Structures are given as structure tokens and as C-alpha cells.
Length: 577
Image (tube, rainbow, N blue to C red):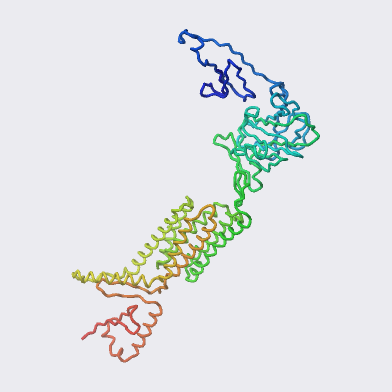
């Protein structure tokens, strides 16, 4: 037995070609370029030698090998078929290695294509009556493996050609890498062969990421046919991007790690996809609808911005206004409408200001002065900026932002409590009665709950939590197909939740000081109207005779407490007897 293999030593289990040399020689038709290894082995050595021990036997072979080579420009079993070498001609102003291929003949070509009929073979071979092959050989240069071979064959009448392609050798009916016989019989199922507009008068396909080296195209056609009957034009081009990105994208290229090979790819527009941008993802009408939804939904930022401005919360007004504008500009750039800044800058602004707007809503719910609010906003700005610059689109950011906002609200409450209640101290005489102290603590807790109840409008608060839950659900439901729907709902719900939270804070006067004294006496704050009413009642009381009965020397001080009924005024006096 004879075994042959390209590039490595063959064996009975692993080889490219094999033949029983007792009956027929080993013939390799149209071998690939490279080093071939041939090994010879006996089928049954003990049968051939008979009684002679195999271990003491040395078998000798006589082998003859031939490499049959046709004259230049000829090939085939009888060297009757034509073979042409295609020369690469680099295009002006093109990407690296982009070129078209033309036959090396005396004829001058003005266009990057040529007629096939004058170059066809006119002789058939044994076993292929009335059919002949014409071969075209080209070289893909080193470093251009990331390119694509674009093959076109156009006829004036019905196409009578079959196209075969092979890397490293001449193709045949039994040995090829790609083929195109007709619209129903071809290797179009291959991942690296893409067909375009092929019909009975046109063959058009791309061989994607063709390997660097020698490629051969074989045309199988009918012989003895008049050349004047039809005209067939052939074009072979080495392109960087297939089909020039179908006019729906930009061809870009990059180098591999070694810097010796370039790889090309299509950067498609918003409406198209695929390796050549030929797949329409969204039609024009759908693109307009998605663009309007993603951009116009940011108008919901008007509601919290207006309420913040109405309450003279200028910091929150700036944040909500900037967040809505930056989000609208980011999505306008994302859908390909308009990009006033780079995409990365707009994306950072969108996420960062959105995070800031959510956290500032929580901070607004605490009644603290501007000094502490600026400090909290500064810390929050640093944290949210780090989140926006590192993995801004991760789903866990929602929980992180809510946690930061909740922490900011708690810090604001602590600052408010420490500021308003620091003037109140424990009485000098602390009762040792544990029951009395426990009652005082319970009274303090009840009063704290009442204060929280009066501080917020809980209907708006519940509406805010509902809108926030809807925003979280829409964020988790986003997919590639439904992104524009759920993200538009996200814009609406997140801004409306901020609006409801802002509205949930009741108006608190500057002079409000609500506290709980541990001995059980409760001091309550009031709003501005109640303060004015109490002042007016005190003035009336001053005009009455009852008030004149007290002399100035006998009154030590008068204390007016807040949030007492409008017809009562508590007067503490120390009379000298």
C-alpha cells in the first residue's frame, strides 16, 4: 500500500491519498503546493514470505515517482486546458492590500474586469465529454488574510458556467473548497461563502477571510461553442470588507497582536447589522418611532425640575434639568440623529447625572441647611462618577444607587436631629423610677412617629415607591429587541418617581423645633400661620385687664410653646409672695 500526505508523514490511519500499488499506481491529481510525504507498507507480509520468519526478513521495494508538469499556461490530464495567472493591481486611495486581479497577457484592460470567452479552453478530456476547464490562479499576499475575495461572473444570456475554488491547488469535481453550480446547487451553506444577487445570468459571491497564499478558480464549461454567441465578464477583487458594507456602514480595519496581519470589519449604522451590514434590523418608520420614544420620554424630567424650582431647591433643579437634557442628547446620538459630543462623553453624562438625580431626591427629603447638603452632594458626586465611568450599564447599579440615596437620607436625618435637639439637655434631677422613664421613652417614640407622619405626604410617598418599582422592573426587562420600549418607560417612571418624592415633603417653617423631653413634657413645632396666630393671641391678652393684674416684677418669663391648640397659651410664671 502507498500512502501520501501533505505536510507530515502519513500512516494507514491518517493520510490524504492511498492506493494498492499491486493493482494501480498512486496518482495525485492537481496536488497542492507544499511538501508531500509518501510511505509504502505491505498488506500481509507473512503471506508473501510463506515459511520464512518475518523477524529475520528484510524486504526491499523498488519505487518510481514522477511529477508531471505541463507547459506554462497549460494544465489538465493531457495539458490541454488553459491556466492563467492573475496579477494583483492595487487600487488608488484604497485600504491596505485592496486590489483587483487581471490576467497577465498582452491585452490591455481599461476596466477592472475582463471577457472570459477569449480565454476559454476548447478541448475536453476523457470522461468529461463536451466539458472543459479553464483555471485562474492568484496569490493573496502575506498579511492580507483578513480580506475577502469578491468573485463576479456576468453573462448576457443564461449562465453556462460552474465555478470551483480551491486553496493551494487546482479544483476539480471531487476536490474543491467552494463551488457554485447554480442557484440551488452550491456551497452557500458554508460560513465563509456569502452569495449576493446570484441568478441565471449572474454569479456573485464573497469568500470571507481568504487565507494568504495561492487560490485557484476553475470554470467548468461546454466546449465547441461559438464565442460570439454571448459575452461573459469576469471580475476578481480582494476587498477589505464584503460588499463594501452594503452602503450601510463604514469599513474599518485593525492589526493583530503581531502587527503583520490586518483584519477588516464593518461598522454598521443604527438600522442595519450582519457581517456586511446587509441585514435590516429596523426599517425607517420603526427607527423614527424608536428615536422619538427614546428622546421624547426624557421630557418627563420637566416635572421634578419644575417642582424643585418652585420650592427654590436650585441644586435639585439644575440636576434634573441637566439629567433630562443629557439623556436626550445621548439617545439622539445613540440612534444616529445628532451627536454634539463624542458618544462616550454623552454616555457618561447620561448615567452620572441620572445617578445624581436619584440620590439628590433622597437627600432633599431631609431638612438640612445648604452647608451639609453641599457636603453630601460632593461625596455622592464622587461615588456616582466612579460608577458611571466603570461598568455603567450593569444591573446592580440600580441597587447601589438606591443604597447610596437611602444612606444620604439617613445621614441628613441624623444631621437634622443633632442640629435641632442639641439645645435640649436632660433634667438635673433624673427620676430613678424605671416605669416613669419607660413611659417617657414611649412618649418620645410616639411623638417621633407623629412628627414623621406630619413631615411627609404619604399619598405622594406611596406613588413615588410605586413608580420606582416600575422603573426597576422596566430596567430588568430590557432586551435587544425591546430596549426602546422598556427604556422609554424607564425614563418616564424614574422621573415621575422623583417628582412624587419631591411632592411628598410637606412645607416646614424655619422656626420649627420639635423635640421630646425625657421627663414626659412634649414640645411641638408649628407652621408659620400658627406662629402668627399665637403671637396675635398674646398681643390680645396683653391688652386685657387680666394680663395687667400681673406686675412686671412678679413675672419671671413667659414661654409660648408651638403646636398647642389655638385657644391656649401656656404661661410659666414665678410669683413672689
